[in-house]
Amino acid sequence: MNLTPGNRPSIEAVYIHIPFCIKKCHYCDFVSYPLAGLPVEEYCDAVIAEAALYAAHADSIQGGIKSIYIGGGTPTSIPAEYLMKMLDQVQDCFPLARNGEITVECNPKTVDGAYFSKLKRGGVNRLSIGAQAFQDQLLQRMGRIHLPQDIGNAVHEAQQCGIENINLDLIYGLPGQTLDQWKGSLNAAVQLHVPHIAAYGLKLGEDSFWGKQYQKGLLQVPDEDASADMFELAMDILAASGYRQYEISNFAWPGYFSVHNRVYWNNGTYLGLGVAASSHWQHLRQTNQAALKRYLQEVQEGKFPVGESEIVDFDTALGETIFLGLRLLEGLNIHEFEKRFGVKINKKYQKQLEKLIALDLIACSEDQIKLTRKGIFLANEVFMEFLP
Image (cartoon, rainbow, N blue to C red; front, side, top):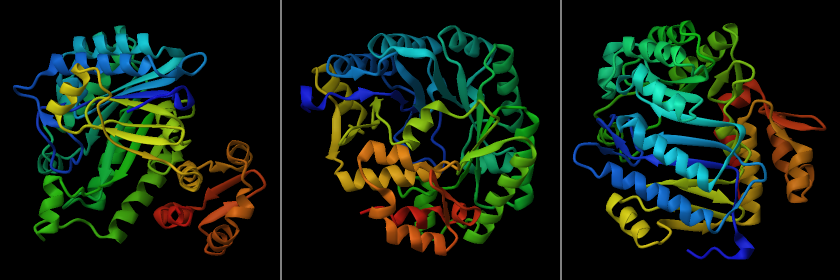
């Protein structure tokens, strides 16, 4: 990879991938490995070294980057000291803005008060807890290592340590999941008084255990109508409980919208560190090596550990900015879009906009284009209209 003065990336956010976990879940299609016997400390040192490589060639945002997100895998499957060392030294390379957001993903079974205290002292101010469901049988079927009571314990211990900004991930459309079970999970999450809840429909990646079973006809999942009913139930219950649906799958109290994810939805610039991590800056998208041994070797040799990269052409950048912006329920700001790209959106996409308005999938004003309630359920069909 060759970073020259003409394409020095200006980074708004940093993502750090921790590819280790206690046990791989049946739906997981991310690059992750069971922890036992792997070079965890060596990997963490490699992430620090990779950050230093980029820092020597990148322009940071004036005033600091907006956020750092540590995801996985299960970041909290490794010692908190390793995470905090990485976090500290990555911030030496890419200083965080004052009041910037630092998120760590965790599995409820891998954390306790002592662990959260270490995260808090290291500057972590947001957690994303993988709850997924509140029923024993569903958690076991997913291959999760935690029990329903572990979710509440994790939330309470984090709050006691002073980390109030907590997200709970929930999944609907699971094999064998009923609407009543989904309602129970939503209500249980609400009762924990966390400020953010993400409700995702199950995605069956081809390389996941469930994905392979599904392709062989050995796994049944709720049909599209049943999944839509679950999604609508989430919208109704969470709205009635004081959560605002600010993005298709994300619900939060005012003031607790995810800073890091908004960088993605605004099609902003971010750096991904670690195995299989993705980066994006102006005109360039890249993904790191997915093989752990190869990643470690290239970083040790002082190379950028990039596995794949592509130039994002102008029309693709336009389309991606529109559909990512439409994921936000406030919609896409027309004036900001036209200022950014020098393109009149109503002129370039006149046919698409007229079609989608006629189908009641989007609503347009002088300032915004946004999904209608009907459009939220058919979002992928809307997004396809803007891709070249």
